[in-house]
Image (cartoon, rainbow, N blue to C red; front, side, top):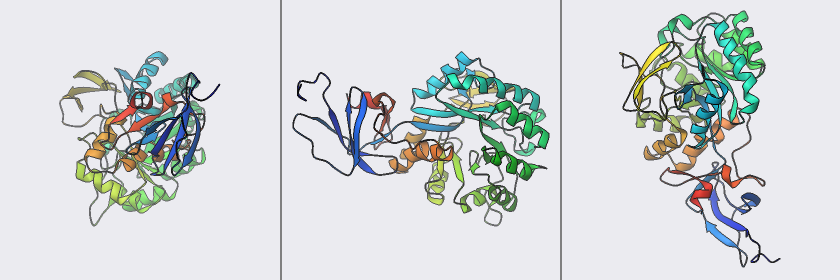
Length: 379
């Protein structure tokens, strides 16, 4: 059978760009990538050729910080409901994610870690669990119940590690708390990504945490000591250290566009777009909850009820990429922040188009930041 007679002819996609900025080409047949290469190539007679010279192609986004969607919070929902929330984010480009849990008393949090850990093998898009607390500074707690917060004692740390059974991938800690530096040593030794966040630490204390292995800053600029020219705090300490990744919630509420541009300029290649999405994501405005706290969503923005305190977001990663591009971030940098940077932090495979990849798992990001499923974009 000749190429022209094949019921599913070979298609060549030319001049596509990877999240790294590398340009190349790839071939597909029957919805599977069969060959790839860098640079350019001349099409052969009879091949269907699709130029993607203005698009970035990636295997999907990775969200380091997501609490739920579709009315489901990962803190409380059963396995089926968790899958529904994951699928909602999957429909918006997220291929891998950490399931984030808000602060709770250690016994209750440990029990939930054990439940989710047991369910993870049946949730392939879930790369593990992120515990946002309970080792947070009371004065910077944001949408975390004060009664749930505690210091990171060795006993508390071991209880969480044991309950998670190797599936605790990230944890947010305020490094100024008693015992925090020892906890960071223990957690990083166990392979957990330690994030500095919900903290009133000054530059020196945050720098000590990063020098002991912490490698992430939770939702930069939010729920932390601000950056000042004489006391740059945890933001300055994170920018100063090349191994540290800085989270950014690009929803237009947590960060001004100028602050977003500043982050990308100050720490190139080290920004991870996250959603911090809560259960109201994908739902109409109304009344919801984060842990034990009541939340009111107005105009798509969640607040602790009766306050102006932000309580997570209703963001999706495709919208975060769009907002970055509209703010002036180059599309390759925005896509890398949603794909390759967070994947690398977790030790996940680089989100590139490899031989054997399914086209159904690919995304096309256009120069205006709009995101489409590959099969729909190239039909």
